[in-house]
Length: 387
Picture 1 (cartoon, rainbow, N blue to C red):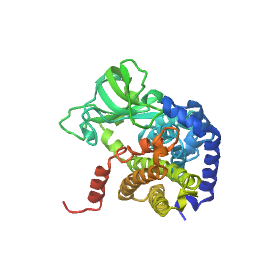
Picture 2 (cartoon, rainbow, N blue to C red):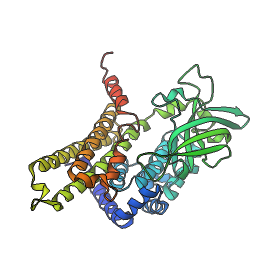
Picture 3 (tube, rainbow, N blue to C red):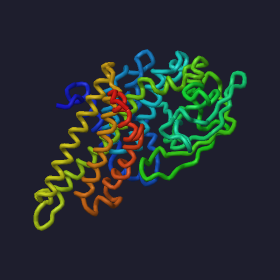
Picture 4 (spheres, rainbow, N blue to C red):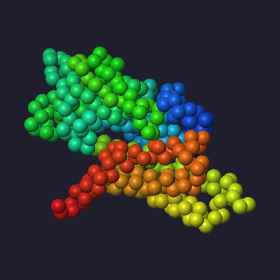
């Protein structure tokens, strides 16, 4: 039995979500959101009404308390049908909720966490730059202090969901670049602030919230919008690589898990309905073997993802396990989806079927949240493999 199912609360939550998805996220609507690259705000608002964005928010701020397993389960379920809805949920419950709980000042928590739980407030990550990917400590976007304000200049790339978010959660340099891991700060920047320009990027998948290049031209923000308050100046790196990093790896694994489950379910049903030579193709041995393989690989992914989530939820050290889960689930889910596409043949390649969208969305999963190569480095280093 998978860890996520050995719990009545989580079983009820999964059942509720599946009913919600069938009622509020039917396939034809999801296909339209993807084709139009449109974010369904009304669906996000209904998730807020169900209290799901409050799963990462303490009760004293209007949430239901930190529940990592439930949050991962919600991500998996939503992403099994729509990344447009699933990614926005992550931007609210995880990017905003979890980060604020971990590293914000008391004043910021009081002001923003109730909005996460009750309004679905969203953050977009502003980390990557045109010349900075995995090496985030080398960011060149600057924020110089002028009185009670910071003046931000620079550019960010691959800022997913920037246009639908309330804040860009940006890593900036607030001092000399010589000390690479110091003089970095996390700041909150409104995407509609004067001097902020959003330029859409036309990506293969992950349609809905949009992905953007973001430029900052003398953007002024109050020092109070430094994450952690004024005391957070220069502490951006410590805040970035804290406990939230393990959960971020699990978020991406859950996204990949959801996409893979959608693909497996569709291929499984298709193979029973598609008739060739007078029989359903599920009677053909090669197809049966592919179906058996994807079911088996999916079960392995699910067990690995929720095992790592349980470790994080219990407060145990889990840096290696979350890297392993991110690596294995994302790489394996990609293989699962591509096999499912083969099962559906030409129908898996046309936009009339969801499989084509699963393929476009899954291809980026081994890249998001720290590439597979980065995770392999992490695992070897965390397990103290000699260099």
